[in-house]
Length: 236
Image (cartoon, rainbow, N blue to C red; front, side, top):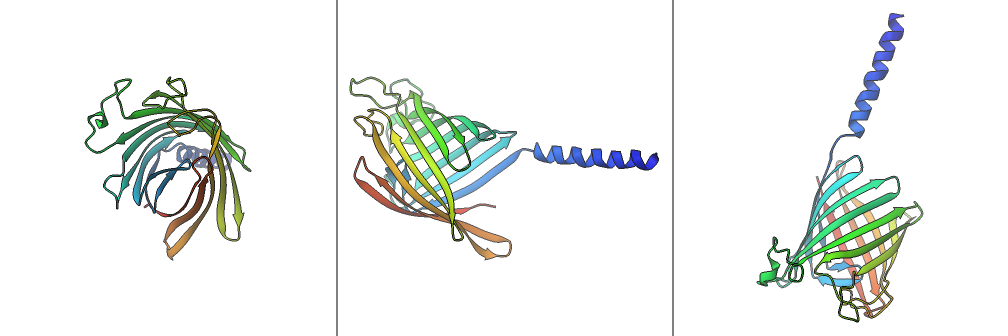
């Protein structure tokens, strides 16, 4: 009987430890270096460093992300905060984008005036089915674009991403589109703005250290432009 009780206590301790490990707060610290900053098919800057700092707990996460031009001092500086929740394949979130443009007085971070702020607030919802993922994004407040009638466009963007493996490299094919007119994305109606093929691979430096690198080709049929991007990630 004592052995059974002892065995049960051991199982309980192991299960409790495992549960605590699963529920622990996760921290993300990393930084990307990219040859150019291409976002949803749009050219947003030259060579940039893009740091990430985030915390997550039970599917809920808060992430800070930024982009700062290295070679071109005129590139817009960006600082984003994203509050997100995911469960299984489902995800939902809100992002506060902030852009600092030179000496523009509206670039002040704590300036939230409805029609003169450099903040943009965006909501997103999506689902990852494994073989593909779908995402929808809509600007709901802040410095959004305008439609053909000069009114707030509630600018939106949708994309489908399909991951696959070829040889020893992880690939992702992405197709993104803007559903209606907005000068935020420079569209006059429905337009495909992002066709991207990206390859990711970890380069082993030592037995305990490797560097994730990626390359991608992006075409924007709407603007008739194409980009080749290389980047790598540094993290503890």
